[in-house]
Image 1 (cartoon, rainbow, N blue to C red):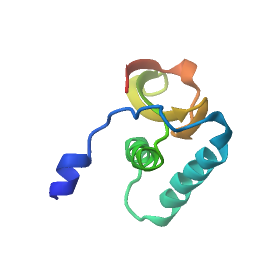
Image 2: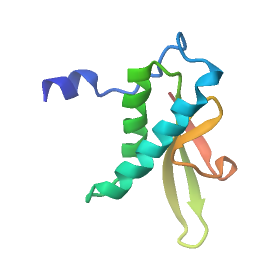
Image 3: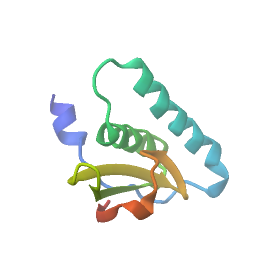
Image 4: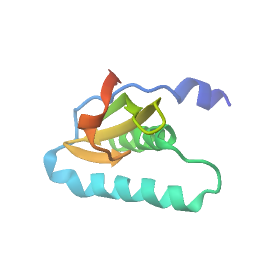
Amino acid sequence: MKYFKKKSHFISSKPDIFTASDNLLLFDIQWAVRKVSKLIYWEYVCRHQAYLVTILCRIYRIQYQIFIGTKINQETNSVEGHVWTTSNGIFLSGACNVEEFQIIQTF
């Protein structure tokens, strides 16, 4: 648990190594997030997916951004939250219609 407490924070990575020609690596990360969601038996929601992307992007030193947003569901009249991660204009986790959400915070 010591490793988790020290290493489990969300901080955007530094853009020192990643280049636009490495888009195949981004698609591999995207694929890994989808496969993990099918293999595990517990609830694997958008925030967990964003955390997995954070870990993988740090390993490969890829620049990424995490967005936290909310929207009002008109049917239930309740507030819904969502987290998504992008890199180089590609959704790595939590693909959504960004215009529906009001962005609260970006990392």
